[in-house]
Length: 322
Ligand code: AMP
Image 1 (cartoon, helix red, strand yellow):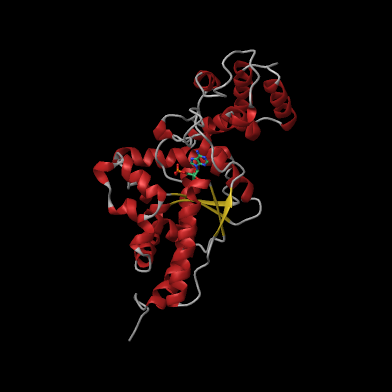
Image 2 (spheres, rainbow, N blue to C red):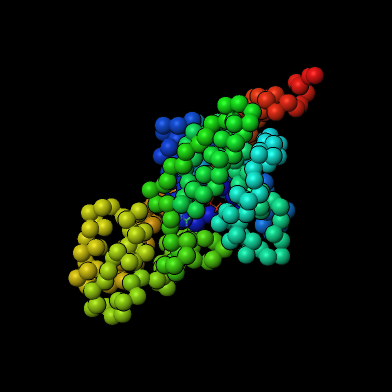
């Protein structure tokens, strides 16, 4: 995940929650991709703080350093080296077709840089360096992962079977819509609920949230299947209560205001403990730094092994002799 500012409910439900689950069964790697974050405008002085806060948010959300190797991309320079090598087997046409590149080029017209274009190849390096077998993603990243598989296949076809083709695992909530009920929840669109927002802040945002547009009066029956807030209940509220909300909405026993209040409660139940743990860890920054430093050291060792093999097979590097 990129350290691009405060993380939101879309990141949590679409990504972090499934990472926490997967760490029970996999040797997991979670990377804070600061090299990737340089492709859009940013303040150098802010970057270390953002990296730290993201690490903190992961740990507060249940990423367990005993089960997950949590690290910062720039602590392992092999990511950029492998990216360069993979560039040589990646067709420009494939990168130009990426939806995220088109969207970001539109958003940042003043700086459509090569890094933005090459973003998925760096992502390929992030995964292939560690022989990642499965990559948990939200719907928006499936296209990039397909390209990573393609890059691995191309490289293997040219230099011999070595890189592992990773499979995507979609999270339980692969696409969380924003409070506007239209676009994907994202900080840049301002339609988000921040992971660390208080119940009061969340309640105030939910008051203006989009629901069933045909439900104009309190007495009108609602259609939960078209309501984004009902979808959020599905991810956050106990199933028996979700069934009650469904019935209550359809029969107009409960109104949108009631439904929003119940969602505030569900969000508080889920996010409250994360906020508390975040607050506690914030006062122990050394612990957080120790975790990411140890993660970086483990990753440098694995990456060095992968790069030795990759360089040999590509006929470059200090081990290559005529
Ligand atoms: P990003 O903010 O683009 O760095 O995304 C980090 C992770 O969060 C990726 O795995 C995304 O798929 C996931 N993600 C971001 N926004 C959403 C959303 N609205 N719904 C579901 N997943 C999301």
